[in-house]
Length: 84
Image (tube, rainbow, N blue to C red; front, side, top):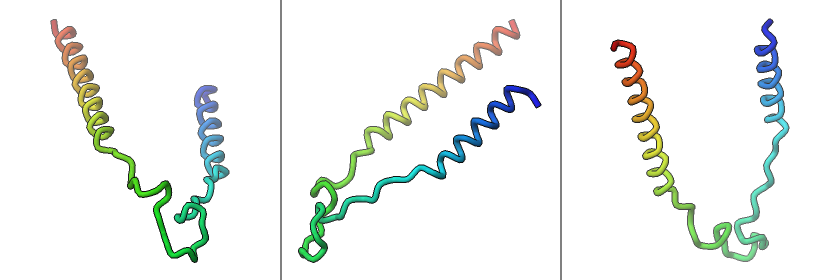
């Protein structure tokens, strides 16, 4: 077996095995740590709602479009150089 291939297989096994041992913390109680008998059930962190993802999505799509356009331009320029 090729030495590089062996190293990649070992690295993949370590990463996969390591993911089985990763554990997250328990989420905080919805009442900001209060007892559930208080009668209120506020969201964690107050009444802000969720995180805004609209501008991040637009940024991601724009950068992906620029990356794809550049890749297409480079590929097209490589084909024209080979034929010339």
